[in-house]
Length: 152
Image (tube, rainbow, N blue to C red):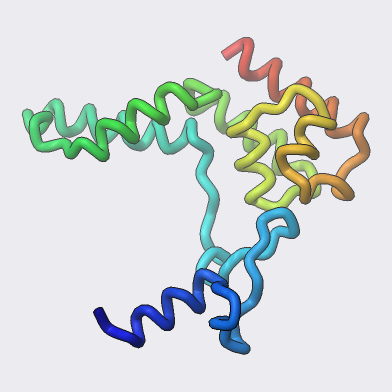
C-alpha cells in the first residue's frame, strides 16, 4: 500500500500526532465541516427516497430491474423506512418552513430527518441548535413539522 496514501488518510481522519497544520478539526456539533462540504447541499432522507424510487421505476420500465445492485436495493429499502415525508409537496413545505429560520443546512436536514418531538430532544440530538432559537420558537417549528408529517 502506498505510504503517502496512508499518511494522507490518517491526517484526514485526525489521528493523534498525524495532523498537518492545514487540517481543521471537524465537529458537526459546532457546524465545522470539511471544505468539500461548504458548497454541497444537504438532502433529506425523504428526498433521497424519492430520487432512488424514481431511478427504480426508470429501471423497471427499461426492464433493467435485475441490474440493480444489492447496495441500491438496500439503500432504497432503508430510505423507504426512514423517510418522514412521502411526497414532494410535503417536502417542499417542510423545506420552506425551515428556510425561514436561522438554521444551517445541516441542521435543516437533521431536524427534518429526525423529527424530534420537543426542543429539548432536538437540542440533545443536534447540539448546534442550543443557541440558535428559543425553546418556544423551536417547539412551534417542530409542532408545524409534525403537523405536515401527519396530514400528508
